[in-house]
Each structure stands twice: as structure tokens, then as C-alpha cells.
Amino acid sequence: MARKESITIDHILETAFAMTRELGAGSITARHVAEKAGCSTQPIFRVYKNMGELQSAVYAKAAQFFRDYYAAFERVGKVPFTNLGMAYIAFARKEKNLFRLLFVDVIPNRTSMYELLNGEAGNVVAEINMAKETGCADPGGMFMKMWIFIHGAACMTLSGDYDLTDEETMKLLEKAYNSFLA
View (tube, rainbow, N blue to C red):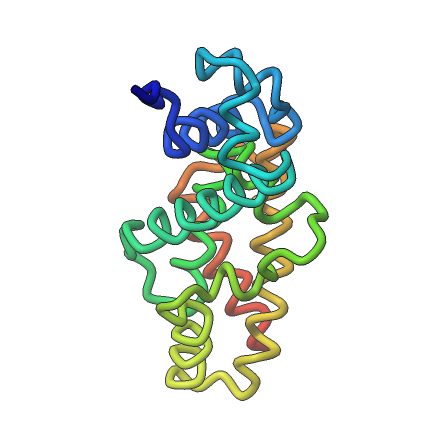
């Protein structure tokens, strides 16, 4: 009778994802994942060809986690790009290690930052359309200006140099948008 597999691919992926959230992507080694999963390295390499394949699966799970986070984020801003900015900065604050993995680390052949942010729902496109509808003459250019501003603020959270409240952040994003219109 064949032995029942107790360590599943889902368990390995969940373990590696949890480790990434807590400790960062650099913590994902076969030995560390096996230790946390309560197994040897053999089950890991039974379901993944190599660690690169597991890391790709963790990245894909992190990307879906971000998409779900963004979709569920409460939209309160009336000015274009403010909701996008609020969600992105909040994600950086709450999920520092996932933010690094998705938006800071250089990872070859991965989803572009724009594609990840835009998502299947067309998040960026919707914001660009909103800017156009409210009279912005160059909504694509406005996105670029706002994105540089938003990404910079989000990255500042990683080092602890961003300590504005949500209310202050919203006001800052609105002010940036209006300044860029001028």
C-alpha cells in the first residue's frame, strides 16, 4: 500500500508565502521552508522542480494577494489617482515584504509594475479615464507624475520615513494632483 502524502503542494506554497510575508523573499530556501513546513526537503522537490519554481509560485500568490487587497480597498477619494495612491501606500505599510517583492526587487521575466497595478479590472485605465473626464488635458502624463509621487511615498514606508496619517496622505495626494494640473 502506498504511503499517503501528508505534505501537499498547497502546504508548501502557504508556508513559503507566510515566510515571505513575515521575513522577506530572501528567507525562502529549501531548508527553511522544509523546517517551517515540518518536513524534509524531499517533498518540496517532489512538487517543484527547483527553488526558482517555488519562488515563482510565491510571487504569483503575492501578486494575487495584492490584486485582492486592491479590489477590497475602500475608495473614498474623489480626485483621480488618490484612491490608487491610498491603496498602494497602505499596502506598502501593511505588507512591507510583499511590497518589496512585487514593486521594488528586480526580478527578471515577472509582471511589470504597471500590469500588476492595472490588474484585470483596469485600475490604472479607470483612473486615467477619470482624469480625462474631469478635464485633465494629458491624463497619461498625469498618471506618470502621480505614479512617481505615489511610488516614492510608498517606498518611504519601507524605511520608516513616511509617518503621515491617512487623512494627511489623502490631502497630499489631492494637492499633488492639483499642482500637476497647473
